[in-house]
Image (tube, rainbow, N blue to C red; front, side):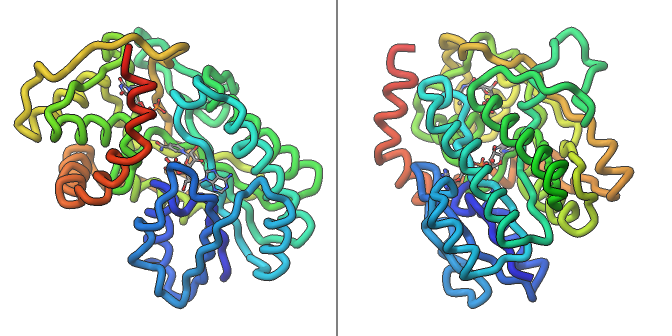
Length: 339
Ligand code: NAD
Ligand code: TYD
């Protein structure tokens, strides 16, 4: 089995590569990554010398390069994690989100159509469903919830999903899609809520909470997301969407307080800042379909996962220190300077 994993130098893709090499000793994996600001080869250092692993610095939207790679490697399976993934950046500059998330997906789908494939899996997000109101805790996203996007990021991910459906229906391609809730765990880029708050708290910097911090996200430990995709690749039905989540809804402010508490930092570091434009209120996945169809259940409880995650950031200060001390500082100043 030869598998292309795009975006494997990022947060979830790298965790997926570690998971697959560990669980499937006979698989060959090729990581295709453009190494944007979010891609980090240091993350993949533990597998770089593994004979079952190869890295290719390639843009998924570069048709010529992608076709050449498919011609040479003849992959059996493609799992597409590659994306611009940060909502705030999509508000600042939507174009690159369309180039990578939409056009890049189309190039991969065309390559699969031309060179043949056993399975193409699109890693999507619950954000394609838009948001739920805070006063309706009885509502959840199911696979039947209409697509109703809020941000340029979610609009680009939804567009890619629609292309996948079209290629399945029109060309009969073997495609599956998964839509997961917010992930947390090792190797998450420190622009995202949990690692940003850990890094800032450790440096005794302000903890910038958007609005009143009442927005709700449904958090899943990254390894559980990886195990769900692994299962969908093995047993999932072509043409179907699988929602992935573990019923772990939390308000942002409660997450930030928990991080302060775990790191013995004062809550006075919390600073309420101008809200994100178009800020989605609540995400909540109904995971009953993947549970009943494939038997998937998450293994990591939030209390354990967040402890492991905080410990990982404490043990790997060089990994994220290299990031926050580099060009990330310009981003931070742009995003939070006058907020
Ligand atoms: P990330 O930003 O950490 O990593 C993205 C990776 O894609 C980086 O390594 C980057 O270099 C690479 N990349 C970007 N543009 C590329 C291009 N044009 N060609 C090749 N590589 C490119 O993102 P993540 O959090 O690991 O998310 C991975 C996927 O999972 C994304 O598709 C995202 O939409 C989806 N997702 C993320 C979450 C979450 O909570 N993080 C939840 C659900 C779904
Ligand atoms: P984020 O990690 O960017 O994920 P997403 O927007 O895709 O859900 O943000 C999670 C939540 O945390 C979201 O409601 C925005 C909020 N947030 C803050 O309050 N402050 C911050 O500095 C960041 C990055 C996010």
